[in-house]
Amino acid sequence: MDKNVFSQLAAEFDRMERTITYQKEVISTMQKTPTCPCCKVPADGRIYTLPELPKMKLDDCSWAEIAMYAQSGMADKVFAQGDTKKFPLSNGTVMMARIIDFNHDTDKENNILPITFETVETLNDDFQMNPEYTNKGGWQNSQLRKVLNNSVIEMLPADLRKVIKPCLKKTSLGGNSEKYGLTSDPLFVLSEQEIFGRKIYSHGGEGHWYGWYRQENTEYGKCKQNGERDWRWERSPASGGTSAFCYVSSSGSADNSNASISLGVSFGFCV
Image 1 (spheres, rainbow, N blue to C red):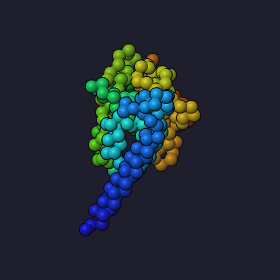
Image 2 (image 1 turned 90 degrees about the horizontal axis):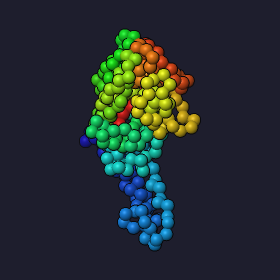
Image 3 (image 1 turned 135 degrees about the horizontal axis):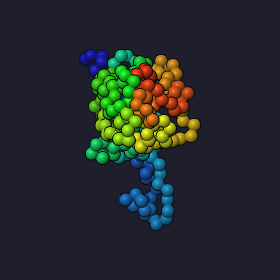
Image 4 (image 1 turned 45 degrees about the horizontal axis):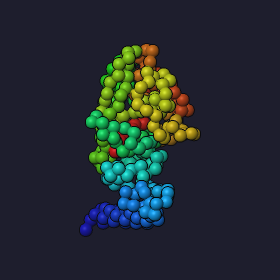
């Protein structure tokens, strides 16, 4: 038998063993507190605090397993905000995805998407938001949106692409107008408000503050995959003009610049 087959079987058995071990921990934890079948009222009438389920390490799970827990409604019980998972790109490099919130985003049918991830690093290559000095059309008509969801997504491993759910995002249409557009994509970049919790240079009204960035002492600045400090695009057109989009500087501060300059890209996705 091919050695690769043995390796794949060994990896699969290892995952099964971890899953069984975790399920035993869950059963053991739940048996420590006497509760009625609805798991809300103790059998003896006294008030108890429900036991917290043990957390799974994200990097120990396959993307299929992560999607299974997401679909079961248990994602926020078994995984921790801030936990990370490595994944390879087709160019031979490796990135990490971090959980930045649970039950935060929705799809175009308004179904809740259980887990939102963002890459810890920016891609090694920098990208223009648009080839010209314009923010007209906003994220909806931007070149970067097309690049992410045509070229970059094809660099992701097949098992990850299989579980990503398109996410609905509201973003200003730029051009110094008051209009907004809706997009539904597998990959996206975050808005200024989703990172900083308020509008600074943007029009605002572009989603809500993610839990990861709401914490004290969260690092807003990022590095490329190769470790270099990097600036990164937000999908928010800058208000008060027609040429700029917002970005996060290498030090983690908010700023904006012309759409045609090349900056780093850290992308989000939902499972």
